[in-house]
Amino acid sequence: RINEASGPYQMFGVLADFMLIGDGNVTYLEEVPLDAIEVFKEMTGHKLGPFILWGFEYGEGYSGPSEDVLREDRITTDPLLADKSNFLHPVLYFYDTTDDNLLIQKR
Image (tube, rainbow, N blue to C red; front, side, top):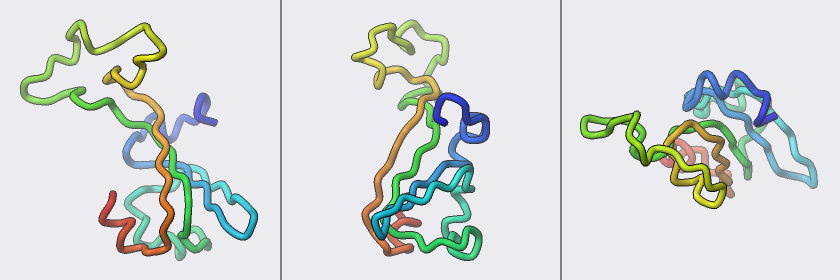
């Protein structure tokens, strides 16, 4: 799905997929709005507990007042240094909490 999902790619930082972990099962929810985390249960019908969230983010230093988005060091062709690229790339976050307030603060 990471290679084919257009929603999280085009709406990076807005939509993400959630993998809810519990009771020996994993429930996969696609393209959940991140701003809806406060009403997650009402919107999805699922309680928010331990989960993995994946979406897309630009690398650190992608843009800003002193950043040139076309500078030479913005990319690497070495797979071992892929985390140094400032282009859009998939990210995964694991949250091991059932405290909704903590999740809202971490975001």
